Length: 81
Image (tube, rainbow, N blue to C red; front, side, top):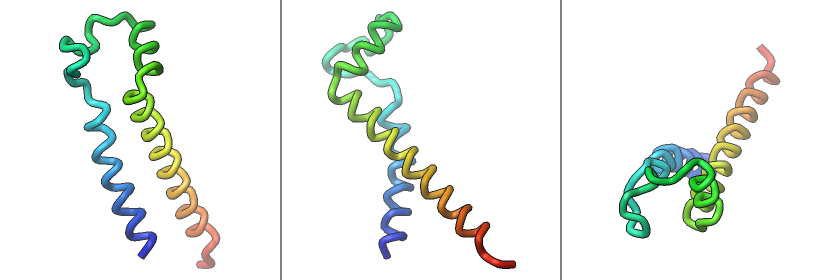
């Protein structure tokens, strides 16, 4: 049951994270991020709690996915044929 719940959560995250990372207009700056230089974009991403949260959630989701896949491959490799 726990595995099923984790798989559903991972599937939902894999669909939600790209949507959250998609460029869109924010009410804080109506023109989006298009007028920023690269150093301003990096500073903005790291200074904004919203953007930092998205980055952290993405890193956690990728780490969980990599861990999950490596455990599955490891358990398949240890099974006798």
